[in-house]
Image (tube, rainbow, N blue to C red; front, top):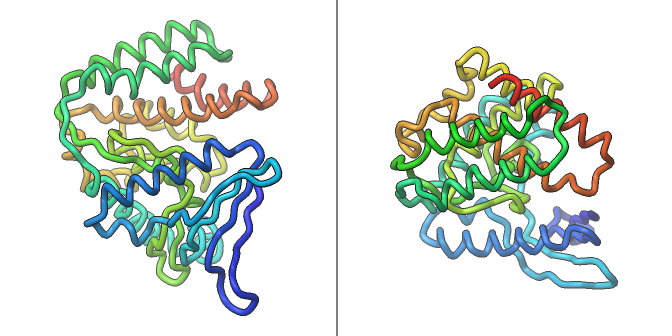
Length: 289
């Protein structure tokens, strides 16, 4: 992937040019998602934090896209300069996620279509890859039964999820930590619970801060049966969206989607690097159940 800010020689960038040989499908999907969100949430305030896909196409074997420039800096950079922005960034990021879900939310009763999308397809994918844990298939099957039982028939509100809402995908005002834009929408999907974005924002951030894998943080929550305080603050305003779904089921649902997406993206990685990641982020969680 090549990323090039575009603008006048004197002055700030006006657009972002990205080019990729292998990531064409993801870039095209991202453009379609943002366009759909702009149509769906036309009457909301959401459009101010979304990029605009101005143009895209093939050139010399590269897929390129030109998007509007979103002001600010990525939140990871802002926090590296001023760690005091941590709390404002979390609050503003959670508020942006809530805005996305409010703009696209619909009430549903969880049925077979949702159970397949949220649970079955990710379990099936993980069962098809090599996992360094005894009886991996049995453990995944037990998790599948648990989540289907815990979710079937529940009254919830679903909407679009960004799917990879971490600091690197938040554009923020470096002075205040306020979110000015959300980028990298290739993992986004409709008809998801808002908890996915909220949990990823906080739990992945905790993992980055401590220099550990996300799986380590997930295991700690499972063993203590208690959310970190930052998670509780982020999810409290949205709890009504998932009704009486148990907290641990919610955590495992988020984890399952995350590791399923990453495992699918890893097909071209070296086997050793895949096994290390799977041990730290999948196997340890399965062993903790």
